[in-house]
Image (cartoon, rainbow over all chains, first blue to last red; front, side, top):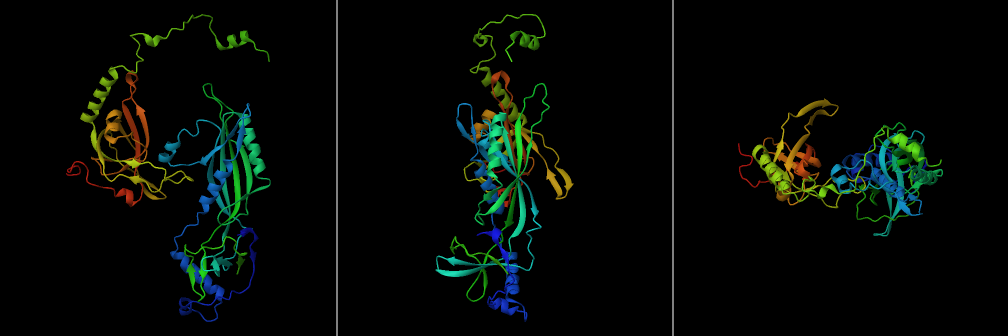
Length: 256
Length: 191
């Protein structure tokens, strides 16, 4: 689903109203407003998670684990990469993983509203998808995903400056100018490189040794996904059951 | 730059006294203290164990079963498997008042605690070392603590006698908070 290619249209949805909706039906209310109202009611009771943070974190960890360092004898080592703020009981399981450098870790930094891509609160997203199980097209509605800029920090820690130079060079080329982030919600989200800052001190004491560390800011221009609902043939708006297998080639989403 | 041994020597050594060394291995001497088979280690351990048993206090330890079913993205375990059957141990600890700092979250109870165990005794009772994630409930207090760090301590004559467990108030959900089961001794929590 290409969320970045969403287009805002003002077409009126032609959904039938459900019996529940008809009961609370206000004369002359537009169908799309009624659907939106029902979605908002369902949202209050829905506890399904979208794994928004998890998917981006996992993607970055896996992507940075492909970085490599070549030593003086042309031996190649992959970068060990993990989440930067583990629970201590679990970190103890892997306490030897950062003895051999280089290592990298990924941490959250911030999330901000993207004002340019912000949507109005009267819109909802309307898609038609193919249900493989019932072999019927189904209509999927949801509130519009929220446009945000999600920021991560990638921490690099090496023993030698040469190792660091190789890694930073590869990171720069990963974002040329952007890196495509693939999640279950989208495969065209763009991540951009922010500042690359040397986190090591140049003032080293008499009995201390240098450390070679850098922090790399990564800004992902993405959308917080919303939960999907199905409009049934009788006009009911329902939660999408897990048993329904939606085709992985969905239609172009449309904002109503 | 060419190697200049004379300059390096001048830089590293500020005195002119020459000390002559030899390459003998000193640990072969009968007087050497470095002897990992030294019977004194067992003696020291017995004394340490007895001291802790005599002057320590009883506590319940709920074992945390460490497995691979944790969240491998965030490296955390939100569904810890804790043994409902506690093991009674004896340890030194200094009960302290629970601090009640008022923060943006309301009254925040904090009471980090350090428990000192005899290593050999504890590992014999548990069948394994003490690990982060284990839950401790002292008999003196009904408060539960979660161990977050375990370090070895006391290295007299190159033995290891103590395990020092740093613990904090248990903040997991009710399924772990309510693991109260009947301990080995029926009267453990009796007044």
